[in-house]
Image 1 (cartoon, rainbow over the protein chains, first blue to last red):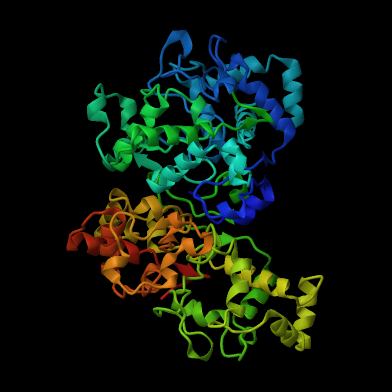
Image 2: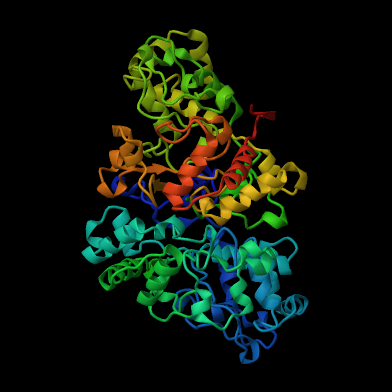
Length: 318
Length: 318
């Protein structure tokens, strides 16, 4: 959670504005636009899709963060270089600029730090930044374009900066839910509205809060009831925040994921264990809140969650 | 909770920075300084203390928000014009610029809207803005100074703008807790550190989160166990957010108060019913989290809370 920001925010973002009836709701609309330098966004988009960032030139950032698949890969865990599978579910890149830190365990402070990691991860892109930068610098046209944007030309820092700038532009406004928050009563059906009521009344919105419905804090997976014992098969990735901070009290804590576009970011949870959104809702109710929802209530919450699918550059996400 | 702000925030605020060991903590240091126009801050400070804003010229904003009393009046409810008592405890003005909305029930969107209210409230300052502005416009020296700051001179909007600007400057950094977060291991004793651990582990930091330890969301007073039945004597102010939104689901919801300088903002709760910080901690544990803390644990949490008293313009709050 970041405070002291309302004035600063007004200056930089075209705000999605809730109607008076929803002014105090725990969930607020996404901004419609983030003010960013267009040339760097465009270059970042190219680099995000450039497979030269991987050692064997088979993978780009988009391989695990496919904009056509909700900003992730819709796989349990991601396939890296040489067909190796990673240990954790790829989080969506959409709206990731709003996260308080990056990665499930928060080990990167921001998108620049995040983007540096996978390139050198031996089971992801398996490259070395020195090699990647040397390779890209053989592309004279690309070097010339970087020269116009960055005084030091095509460096690791410049690549990371433009990728992060592009990622900050990946905001998905105008979901049916946001349109309803902004005053369009017909944007949601009765079930979705009831689902949102339940979502707030049962306490989901305490952590899945704000414009992103998450991304602002780290909470224990199994806050109310143990999650890992029932699932079995413990992995290193299950440590969560503890893996980064080395504090025992941080065991099984993960960044609360955004629920924006959640219908597209399957399978769910850090372990990608849930392939059914209703099932994910039931597990969250039980393990995080120690409560049980009826099947009818779960279906309503799912309808609400499905209404969180927004638009990217004006085109509905599918 | 406001997201999409990290970049914007960096541009406007000198950030208090947590050490690497505390980078992912739910509580983060206050910024050391907020970048605001100094002349408007200074004029706002004068207006904040100007009793001509009340009908009988006995009260200023500072009467209920005394900077020497933790930014509030340290009274159960505030004494307004003619000795009338209000219905709710005065929240602190310190760090109030970080609140997602203003007032316990969130009925004001920001500090400008907030500041407009008490002047015309018949049991607070009991004035009319037209009269106040006319009265102030008889002060030629003041009018001249407003003319330098605001093109339309001394108007209601100008008075509110400079008061709100001054209020945004009321940040209280460098508390012992923030110094500890920033890496000074000796800034807290063992009890306070243990109290913070409990505060996080038991779930207090879920709502009392971020730089302000609150101010970002509305939560039900009596989330886990009923608060009002035991207290008795229901009042209109107990409705909380429902009083503003008219939604039954918002009954007894209040803006989660900041815990910054909480040792000074007694008595506690919206009803000012708690005069003992240990008692307030016990009630919160029971009614919000459905848990019980031992007396030793309560004492540790209190030590932590006492470490949240910061500085105003470099001078320790007392």
